[in-house]
Image (tube, rainbow, N blue to C red; front, top):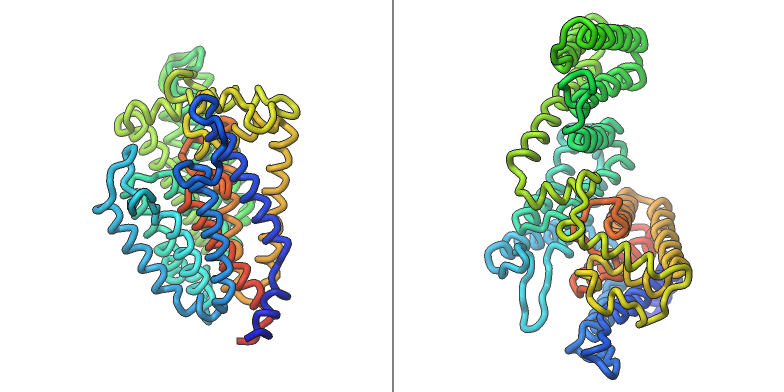
Length: 488
């Protein structure tokens, strides 16, 4: 027994543990700064359970204890129990929809006395285990359709459950698992298609109400059709390796588009968008013909890409203008710079920028931030905790926090790469993907460069479920890593 303990202590990656403790400590101090009030508190009762700082300190202690316990559970137990944990957490997530109270429009919290637990934070652990287990099976191949669909089901099921809890931000975190699938051999076209969809949405909606000077045609809609053509031609040339076919498509699309534009401007006005749709249809037919002649199946997928891209954009356009509620449209318009709305949807981000900017180079000092103390920034100790760091510690302190986060993620990436089996590697990459997504999106939304979707900054944002959930993910991986050289 003692020998086993010594082996664990020797194999444990202490660098990651130190980084974890640093992040947890800095996070707790940031919560102290965000929660402290000049008016309500004369003596700082940081460890009082009636205060948020005290509750967070308790959860940090609980998380460390749970982490120590997890270090005594060997790797085989994680693999063996993964299905049970996944199913149990999914069922708990479904149960939460029906038994939880409505809190700010969300039904994702189970209240126990004065404390609340958010099962969604722990479902990431179950999903990570289940994904690592199924991909570790003998003969598994991500390129096999049945295996890919199994992975897809494991990822999308908790996503759907969390959406039903009306926690869209937490649900979007599960999209980070596609980075893991890509690492394990999923075709890059899946990621390319996802990125293309984002580009269509941003360009189409962002320039929807801007028109050509000479023609009553939306620049946004026209630009999206051109982008679909460009992407499809690029896929034909570099993915399908059909450069002659790509050159033919490129020449036809450019020549016809220029002729249509010239006729519409100088001869008689008409909607040149119809010409672009005709070109897309022509591209599809031509690709299908070449696919049959050259026996090139990937050309069929390229034509399907054109169809799906066109349908996706028009469905997004319809949903944005006819399905989304006004406040949801305003949030997107503020993000894309179409509206300012500093008193409404853009208020949080605007106040956050003011708080960070007021910190200057070295900040106002611990507990001296006026923007956060006077409650100008909503959710300042949860989703917008980073603005407290910016105001109190300034550019220098914010940079230090960012550097520690980056080192932490890179360290986890290194641990994931050194695993000797698929289970450990997939678990490690899942962990890296989750932390990176939270880190990038949270800080991005505080700075106004990503959507405000309400996800916590790991180990910084106030919340016991969040801190404990991240700790369970991390310490489980540290134990898996400690067992990497063990012969099972």
